[in-house]
Picture 1 (cartoon, helix red, strand yellow):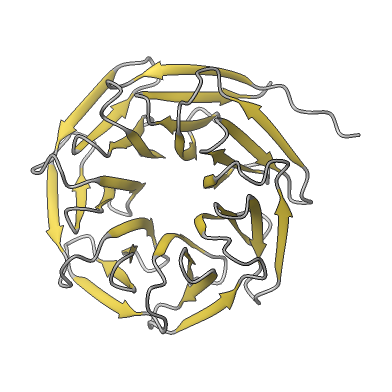
Picture 2: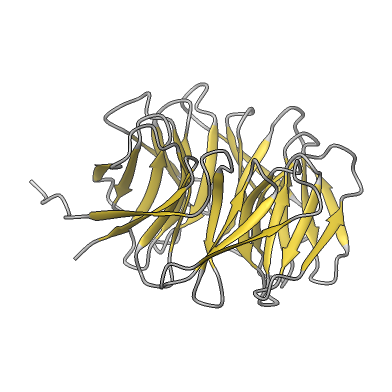
Length: 299
């Protein structure tokens, strides 16, 4: 029986409970950057525990997911403001409106072409924005798909979850889209990440499963011990395992490339874990909507 890895968990207060830390990423400056979805702010936590936050133009824009861009700035989606935002490590903010009204941008990542790619949940489109703000949009072949998170695959395509279409999509740099239906009904995939094993790993919030898909479309699913745990976001670490948040069970999970699963309860009840990333310090960090960031470290 594989030994369950020892994990120490500590929490860092970064806002009040109403602000809602949501997305999180490792910045190019050695700090953690995160969104405060309910207050329209972007936050920063340094390795020594110093917290700074920056107010966006709209407090109701709903900043959601955040990533480091190719230009050394942080880029993020504004789900309710229908904009793509950019913030430098010194706190200068720029905002780019989208051509399609009420697009609901959510997932965002740097593509292999030096642009930022993002999902438009309510417009059934995948968007692309260059560092200087030029936007292109690509329609999906499905309606009502609710494209959510996305990640760059080893094949230089952008892979994304389609939460309401029960499918995983892949889009080439030319806009060509391939759709892979999932075998489990109503699985409602959300988070997705590129693993170190050449596959994409994703979470099925509706079915309580972790999925794995290879660039040729080969699919595997791994059931969690608690089918109602509501896995939400997922990230790969440097040693080939993936870590994910269990929003409905107040846990952080870990899955190895061969499908072995470990789960770790968070110390604060009902902390609502959302975004997750590997930090500059090598630890796993997750944003807790109660107003804290949790750090998970293994020996």
